[in-house]
Length: 547
Image 1: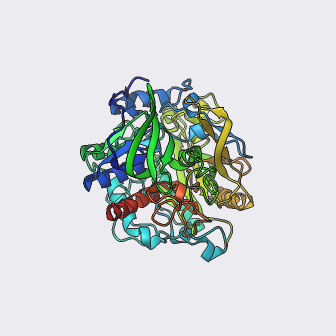
Image 2 (image 1 turned 90 degrees about the vertical axis):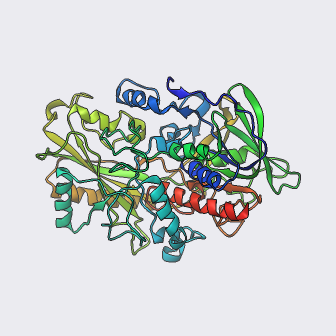
């Protein structure tokens, strides 16, 4: 696609580096910047391309065309082939971006912290397992991550875990529809608060204030929403080298099987290139990391690298979501395009083991045709989040045009880790390089469905209190998934029950680390990006001490 930056043209390996990072998203970018700023020689290998910033307007225009079948961020085709053989038909390519910046190029931008209970699921409820670290361990890194990403939000959440200072940016203002949500929820005893998000409510860190395109997903054309390429560029300014279009096909280790010696990658017109380094960090996400480890099988590790536990790829977790929607008359003064600033964590820290944690989001959308911008015509990725013209002619708004407002209470539901949910190799299907593609095996259980039914109960009460008409609910038997890939290289003290240790080093190889939501032991119901960032910044300190 026009707008992809073809440079650098030299994709040959660097001399032996201090650190080789695989994946140039938010985890890889923050880690590379932190280490290169400390003076280390860092190389990032990224499977996808660099995206020219000036191409964002074109990408937004493509997203707004209802007849456009191509991915806004060029995902799809043989390069990104996958399979889904589990009970859930999982569309992996609706959920990711390959390229410098990673999936944060098209994320919504929500940045809540995990709660204390997320780290203590077994101790509190007898479910799943505890993390080997707790909330207090990550607390200072959460604050650092909020500063670096530029998180907006007020200190108005009575259910949030303790924090040390305010977020760097003020919360986004609320509008007339939000006031209606607040009034109805107040009558029901439900407390709303600001939704923390890495989107500039005012100019910050060299990036502009949000200018209201309302197409945060799938593309922010102004750069007001944070994306991982911000810190990738800063890493380059500090001397790091980024090699794009360089999918890593395997990792090589020494004769003793104790350390990784090289990442073997391909380039557009070259194959089998070897990047050597003292230390390697995998930051390519919860699908591609286990895939790479399994592709790196050797005589020493016939079941895949770092897989002596047999758990690489297992305990895959997502966040299933359901919602309740309805119509209200458009309040006076409501802007035609808006992004939702409110959520509730009231149903998160539960006393009993079930139902699980819920994060409620309060969404709104005009039923006039400009709302197409909010939805982005990305039906696979957004599903039914904002469907203003249900039952009407698409893109027109029918009889409701301009006079009605669709409101929607959406809930992310906690998923328990289960060994049967996994990412594995499909050796019967290959990508453009001849490598087995990732296969997704995913299922939900009674725990998740009970939690999703609780979302529907709460959402229905709220919309009824608001006097909404045409109230509709989504089906817990067929939930939407929100692109949070977690758990496939889980963290733990016991090498037989986990893949990496509390410092994110693999149990099997002394110089191989993982920086990703793939190390999460439990999923909670919070968006994972801020926790990914916090873990990456903590890993940067550990590597600085070790190197």
